[in-house]
View 1 (tube, rainbow, N blue to C red):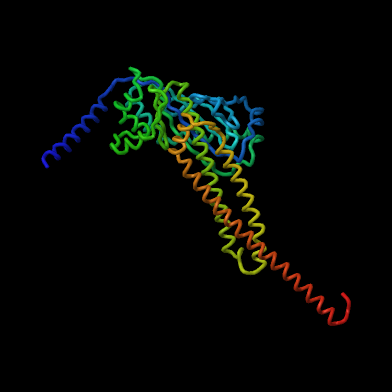
View 2: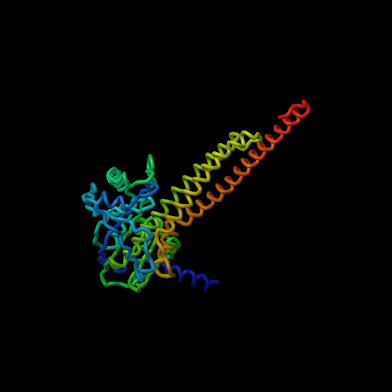
Amino acid sequence: MDREVSTIAGADVSRDLSTKLQQSAQPSARLRGSVLVLIQFDVCEEIRLDELRKIFPTRTTEASFKKAPAYVRYQRTPVEETIEPLTLESGERLAGEIKYYDYGVVSLEFELPFAGGWETLVQLSCRWTSDTNFEKLATRIVKQKLERAAPALVKPYKGEWLQEDYFIFHVREIDGSPSADELLATQSIQIAQVVRGEMQILSEGERQEILQSRISYYPTDLAVIGWNAAFIYDTPVGAETAIQLLQYANSQLLEFRHYDELMTKELENVYDFLEAGGSGTTWWSRWRTANAASKLHTVLLDVNELTERADNAIKFLSDMFSARLYKLCAQKVGVPDYKDLVKEKLQTAEDLYRFMVEQFNQSRAFVLELMVVVILIIELVYFFRGKPI
C-alpha cells in the first residue's frame, strides 16, 4: 500500500515538474508571425463572380494547397479584392482583403504582424478572441462593398446577416527553429492557451483534448485546430493551405447554419398550416394542401441545390494531406453537425411533402368520384323521365 501511495505521489511530482519545466522552457524565445482575423457573412443566395469582376478590380484566388495541388481545386474559384488598411482604437493597423464565394458568402481577412515572446501571443489571443469591434467594422465595410456589387447579387438577404468569425495565430519563425515535437514538448501549455483564448493555464485533460486536433506534414510544421481559433507553425507558403481550408470550412458552416434556419422556418409554416386545418377530413381542406406542398417542394429543391454547391466548392480527388486537414478543420468548427441537422430536416420535409401530396391525391380522387356519381344521377333522372339527355 505504501509503495502504491509512493508511486502515485511520484507521478504527481513528475507531472508538476513537467508542467514547471514547460512554463520555464525557452522563456525568452522570440516569435515572429501574424494574427489573422476571419469574419464571414452570408449575404445572398448566389454571387455572380463574372459580373463581380466587371465591378471591382478583383483578382482570382489560386488554390495553393500543400502537395499535389492539381488534385485539389475550387469548383468555382472565389475572387479577392484588397481593401484599405483598418486602424483600431489601439492604433494597431491591419492589412485587409475581402473574398467573394459564388454561394453567397463574403469573407474578410485582417492581418496584424507581431513579434514577441509566448506571453505576448497568449495575451493577443485572449484580447482578440473576445473583441467585438471587428464585427462592427467588418459589417460596415461589407455593406459599403455590396452597395456597388448589387448587380452581381442573386436574391440578397434582408435584415441582419448570419456571420462567423475565426482567429488564426500564425507563427512563421521561432528562435532556435524547434521541430513540431519539440514545440509540443516544451510549449503545449501556451499553445493550448492560444487556441482557447485563455490567460489561465488549462487543466491537463483540457490541454490534451485541444492537442488531439493537431496535424503535421513535415517535422517542422504544426497546426492545432480549435472551434474558434487555430495555432499554425509553418512558413507563409505552407500555412496558406490551412488558412484557405479554414476559410472554406467556416464559409460552409455559415451556409449550413443558414439552411438550418431556413428549413426550421419552413417546417414551422407547414406545421402551422396542418394544425390550422390544412390536412382536415373535408375534401376542400385537403385540396388546399396542393399549393402548400408545391411551395415546400420548391424549397426542398432549392436547399438541395445550394447545399450541394457549398459542399462541393472544393474537390478532393485523392486521399492526401489537404483532404485530412480539411476534414479536421470542418469537424472542429462544426460543419458535420449542422450538415446532419440540415439533412434530418430535409428528410422530415420530404416526408411531409409525400404526406401532403397523398392527402391532395385523395381529395382529387374524391372529387372525380363525386363528379362521376353526379353524372350518373343526372343520366338516371333523364332516363326515368323518358327524355334523351
